Amino acid sequence: MATLSTHRSNRAAAGAAYAAAAAAYVAAWVELKAYDQVVENANVGGGAQLGFGAQPDVSGHSEYLRDLRTVLADIPGKVNTRLQQLLAS
Image (tube, helix red, strand yellow):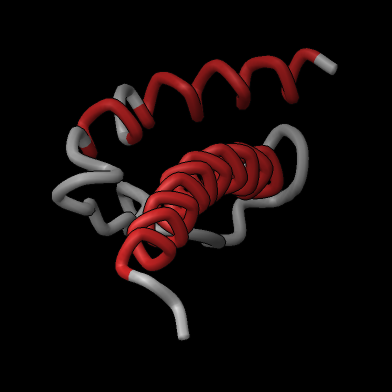
């Protein structure tokens, strides 16, 4: 039978994994959003309306993902930067 100490250790590992997964999800969201905009661009692809809403949907956690603002900081700017890189390539 697992001890409370083991459960706490496993919880900390799960919390760290959740925070890392949230950051990876946001990075993938930004990348896909930028590609959606490339494909939508009339000069490149054709103007179809594809993709996400305004922000990725990430749930905070009171201990392991407290400052959701940090994870979601400047999403439009990140998308625009990546879009410009893709359009220039």
